Amino acid sequence: MLRTWQLLTAISLLLDSGLGLATEGQLTPLDLTHHWVGYGAISIFFLAYVLAMLEESTMLRKSKPMVLAASLIWALIAVVYVKGGMGEKSGQAFRSALEGYAELFLFILVSMTYLNAMEQRGLFAHLRVWLLSKGFGYRKLFWVTGILCFFMSSVLNNLTTALLMGAVVLAMARDHRRFITIACVNIVVATNAGGSFSPFGDITTLFVWQKGVVPFAHFFTLFIPAVVNFLIPAILMHFWVPDEHPQPASETVPLRRGAIGIIVLFFLTIATAVCFENFLELPPAAGMLAGLSYLSFYFYYLYSSRNSHLDIAKQPDHKVTAAESAEQHNIFDVFHNVSRLEWDTLLFFYGVMVSVAGLSFIGYLTLASHALYTDLDPTTANVLIGIVSAFIDNGTIMYAVLTMAPNISEGQWLLVTLTAGVGGSLMAIGSAAGVGLLGQTKGIYTFISHLKWMPVIALGYAASILAHFLINSRFFTP
Image (cartoon, rainbow, N blue to C red; front, side, top):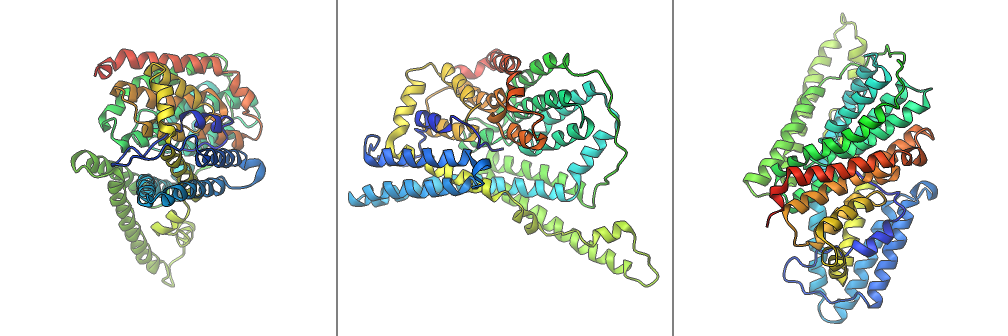
């Protein structure tokens, strides 16, 4: 789920980072929008986000400037409040922001741990080789990778899904640049569309679900609009896909022991999170942590049974097979998978969320909410937010909208969930999937090559919005 390359991030956040958390509780924060603290906070955030966007060229991890920015912004706020004898208010506001981040962090931590465990068990490598062995033609591969991306991204993170299918495309058509380019565009569109209708498919839907503005089951009403968003560009691009057949792959990568069990436990974990939220009124993160315990016990079982198996293999008359030798080097420890999380990404989101909460507490919430949802019609505002997500991290945008808490119908909340999710497909730098493929293909799929297909992607974007209004009109009534 995460974007850091977007060129207009700082500008957008000046407009929509009214982003509040301060309205929760009984806080009545000071209006510091025209105070030196407000100007200083915006300057700090602007500089930090620019440094985050320049990560590839500066080699400075994106989390470092953002975490520092969050600390400095709240330090500035605290100076004013402590001097005014209201230090407890700023402290309470910070703790509220921290609580929101903690729930997101724990949810993502469990999801990433499961994905790392699947990767360790060879699931993704097995799927890649299985696809390569089928001997698909370029046109069939175009559709297979797109459809798989659409459905996989509804449960896996966008970046993992895109890189997996990108590896398949590169292996099948290493010398066919034209196919790689168009297939990567299709992968980006399909991945973003698939993540937009599932509560755990993307950071935007996860934010909306955790906030409680859309019930779990209602997210799936976006399925048809998401399909429209994917199909219209894919159908139009199909006619430019070469009608040729590449050489099939002959290698094999068997699934390692325990892979299927991890998949089953992952879906059981998602079900637990849904039940905790729907029936027990507990945050989804609580259910996800219960799911982490499932994985821990399963790894304990794998470790114990492996040791028992290897004791037999150590008998003098037993010849150790290659599979047994490989098994001796496998690590059945859930904390090994936890340690492989993308901590830079998680800390980056801490910096973004806490900084944004600080800007909200300063008073930019009122300004942004008025500009977007009072001066503009909610539909216009939500469509524009989707277009801006082609340049800016969609998680940041969705967090901004949620914390602005506009008084809009559930249909409009579903609309902004859809537009923020699929709007990133308009440009290569607009989504984690696009940024990941830009690096993976090393100059074959480029910003310009994606830009050439923007008109058909925009057509799918507009059609998905129309489909939402036609199918989900009942949600727009007060």
